[in-house]
Length: 222
Image (cartoon, rainbow, N blue to C red; front, side):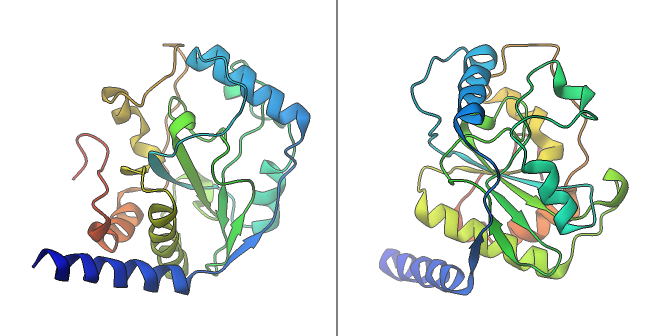
């Protein structure tokens, strides 16, 4: 019985990996961004590191709150934050980023090395891989597409296969529930934001098709 279950898991994982196509679309990540990332890790997590490589424990899903792929990418591309991000500028000038960006037609773009730290979620950057989905109009509308659901499912399978260390699948809107886990590292108790993305509906659609991976949800999630 155990052998049959293992075989079924391997078949599902192999199919998901075979179905995914990843296009490299790198953001600017040179010496300055690497140095700012190391400073962020030291200032916010209390760790002095020689490398910005991480051991992924979490896959964290987002939406961009922008309906256009090019505009979404251009927000993430520069090394420093754009001037309109006053809500998080005080914490660091390091620009926000994520390892992946998924277009509304489901095309998957890899923007940086999968195991480098990206700034995409307070408290959990050092253990998470971020997946941004183009959409979420007005930072409130649940408008992500079926093609994006399918690509997220395939990408979650791919990442879990590549990084067996991954334990959680979490939505950005749930990130504060992770303060109850040992993975939470943020030292500044006043540095928090309210997030809506990508919403319970989208997250549940992805989770329902990745249950075979045994990933945990944020504490208190259903």
